[in-house]
Image (cartoon, rainbow, N blue to C red):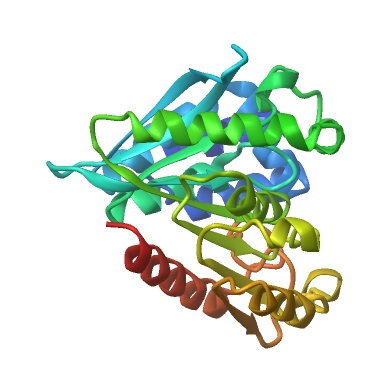
Length: 287
């Protein structure tokens, strides 16, 4: 098995495999998408993938570190457009297994679309995603994170972006997926500098927090993701009552995590349309 994984890695490094084919093969060999992401993070191969894929779409990507207002160090994946000039920025918030190749790929795609994108590793306080013993341990660690710590790390992420030489100052948005989608929604209430928030199949904050939201929110949901999507009408009503801007789309037949192209629940049509909507929304609110 190890030799087969090694040969697959060699084929990818040699250019014989596309990113998607490479990940598909690893998922088959390791037994799951979660195990594949953990292999990439724990082995250091994630950096190889990031470098190669960044070059292919002409963006610059690197690992960065920044500090919160209390001196906590957070690591993140920064992708910047290859073109000259300044750009709006987005913080890309990962799912409940930490920062992985899927989230880094989303950040790279945003950079290719004209945004400076920073995907923070919100497990940094626990030693980082790559230090987790398994995907399950990563999920357990994320569940244990206090909301105030996560918000502090995300606010520091926004400050880092706002001070970056390639960012149009004040033009900051957030995009989150699953666990990260809920944090993107909450960040809209917690941060006075956020100008737009995109929520992919994430839960909404409590009603008292909704009243504090300061920017437009776009929600993107799967029809069969009942735990989240069944609450969307109530969320829309609460947002309207509070005078907040909330646009949402529910994709027929799609489930939770429909945007994640490394997972079994990936829905290509819903992913394409939601990506188009997310870009349009962010471009309409950020300059």
